[in-house]
Amino acid sequence: MYLPLGSTLIGLLQIPLLRLDAYGSPARSIVPIDQCQDLHGSSRSKLNNLGNLSPYHDGPFDKDVSVNLPDDCTVDQVILLQRHGSRGPTKRDQGRISELVKLLDKEHDHIQVAELPESLQFLKKGYTSKLVAEELSIVGRKELFNLGVEFRQRYPEFSTDVAATSPVQRVMDSAHFFMQGCFGLQAKNVNLKTTDCYPDPVNWILPWNSCPKLSNSRGKGLDVADEWAKVYISDITKRLTALTGVKFTDDATRGALYACPYDLAAGNPAPWCDVFTAEEIDDFAYELDLAMDYWTGHLSKGDPGPMAGAYYVKKLIQRLKGNDAEPLYLDFGHETSILFALSALGLNKDIDPLPAYPREHRKFRTSDQTPFAANMVWEKFTCRTSFKGPQVRLLLNREIFPLSNCKNSENDRKYGTCSLDEFEKANKYSLDVEYESEVWDNTCGKPKSEYWYPL
Image (cartoon, rainbow, N blue to C red; front, side):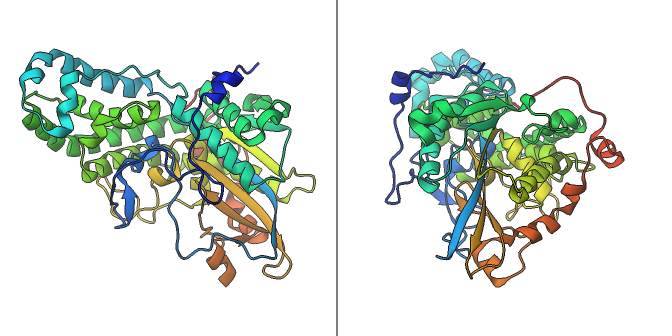
């Protein structure tokens, strides 16, 4: 049985809500932060550029795509894939932060007499980390509650009596808080089912247990990210050492970089975020992108990531075209759940694979695509005259994500849409994928019997 974290009404009411804008939607960023120029030259919050560890923020706005559908169109079906909210660090990342804390404890006496710049004055009061590993934080609860509120405001006529979730506790907790925001007291009428209760041959939210080669891809991604870190971390280490008189190690410097997003995730003061430049944050985000692109995207040898994501695409099209399909589907998973889907759809694939150093313009960018509490919403809609037949469009983190793989008409380009028929044709490869077929086994390997979950 699912036991939500902090599920009492009093506990829920203690969660501070985000400010709503004039349209009744939550403010677009969870933290007030300084602006800087991103690699595209546009205004971007520096701390919204922390890869898949970024606090929730809306996706990039595409000025060439209309957000509002024509007046004669009606949304008939909505399908949500929602990442869990902000959480504590993985054991791997917690270890890095611990290295930093140990160094600062060792150098405590020196720090007390050192002449530190304003951005590092906080060190004189000491820096500690008491983050709860991998647990949904109060910020994460707030993110999901408010996203539930906004979802209900956008789709007030849609309801369901069942939702699917990863069996990982922070995801189940996220689903709980989303339901409270979306359905209020009626949330008790929605049955939350973990994905291991479904008979699908491949879990469309957690496909990795059916694709063992993904573990190799993940390991390769971490290795490549480590190699890039060796390149950019050393200069930061030298700078911190010069500023403090403390002999920083590269491991401690890396711990400081990871402390920035995790302090934000916990709702704590995040002083390390002010220490790093926008360029250093860009380098850190690229480290995270390399790891995730190898694991879920097209950098891995043989493309097991897109293969694993094919079953989400199959499930999506079955729902969009099914005669007895429900008007609303709610799925709760991880950032990898969304990234596998995007990879299978080819929507975040770079024509030239990411090199071992930052590329200025790239499609694969987890800061925008999968921050904490990322959400992928599919809308099926019909129109009296503007479009012929059922159409589909994707909202990724509340902004239109153009379906570039199937756009045919001028309206497709204007609204970022595709006809459902063209969408199906564009994803024929995923529809033809069969579990344990020769193609599947060559790409993914033989299935594992034990479950493992993303960290």
